[in-house]
Length: 369
Ligand code: GAR
Image (cartoon, rainbow, N blue to C red; front, side):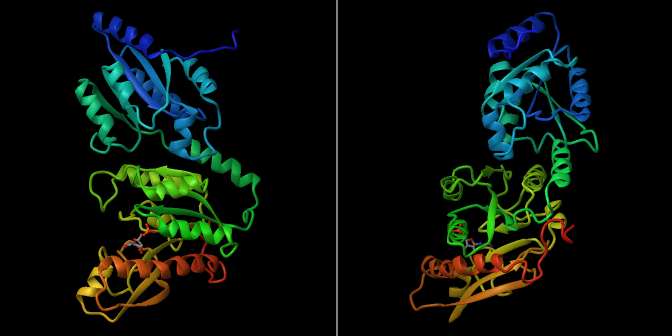
C-alpha cells in the first residue's frame, strides 16, 4: 500500500469533466472540511453522488480550515483527510484547495451539479460562490443534513468528558466587532495587565478587512470572518448558524459585542441567554440604535455616556450592568464626543467582564443553557 497518497489536480478534474461531458454525463461537485468523517457525511456524499455520474470533492486545506473553524482545527491533516475521502464509494476524485471559499475552483472546473449540505437555501449560499455557479451554468442542489451527526458535537462530547468544568478558571470570551476594534484592544490590554481574568477564545467579525481583525491577529487571537449577508444591520440565517457553531466550537463562556453592528438572533440569543454583553455609546435607555453620540448632541444633552448591558432579542434593551457618564462639551462633534465615550468604554467593559462571576452572571455549563 503506498503511503504517499496525492490528491487529484484541477487539470485531472477538468479532464474528468470533459470526458463526462462528451458522454452526456454529469460531474457533481461538493466541498467542505470533512475533518472527522461520520455517518452523516457518508450519507450526504452518497446522496450528492446520486445527482450525477461522478463526483469530485474539494477539500479545504489545513490553512483554510484554520481560517474557517479556528486554530484548533483541523484534527486531521489535509492529506489524511483527502486519502480517507477518496476511499469512499461515492467519491471519484478529491482536490485540496486553499481559499475560504470554493469560487476559483468552481470557475476552473465548471461542474454540472453543485451539492451543498445543510440549512442553506440557494439564496443564503455565499454570494461569490453562487455567482460563479450561475456563470458556469451549474445546477445547485441543497441536500438535508443528517440529524444528530456533527463533528462539533463529537468534539464537544470528547472534550466535556476529559476537561474539568471550570477549566483554567479564566472566563472564555468571544469578542464580536465590525469596525475600529478599540474595545477589543482594551480587552486584550486588560488581560495582559492582569486586570481582567479572562482569555479571548475567538474574535469574530463581519468585516473581512477591518482593523478589528488586524488587532486580533496582531495579538495572536484567532480572527474569524463570517459573511453576514447583504443587509449591513442584519445577519443571514446561514451567518447566524455559522456564528453559533464558532461559539460552540470555541466553548465560549461569554459573548462580547464590541461594536458589532449586526443584530444577533437565534440560535445564539437563546443558547447564550444571560451570557451576551454589549457596550453601547449612550446612557441607555436613552439613544438606542446607531448614531447615539450624534443623537445626544442633537437633543442638547449636557451629559451622555456608555452602557454595558446584557443582550436580549430586543435591541439595546437587556439588563443594564454598568454605566459611565461623559460630559457633552460645547462644539462637540459626534466624533469628538464618541472618542471621549470610548475612553470610558475601554475601562467599563473590561471591569464588568472581570466581575462577571462575582456578579453571579452565568458561564458555560454552570447553570447556563
Ligand atoms: C463603540 O463605541 C460601541 O459602543 C459602539 O460601537 C463602537 C465600537 O468601537 N456600539 C454600538 O453603537 C452598538 N449599538 P470600537 O470598534 O472602536 O470598539
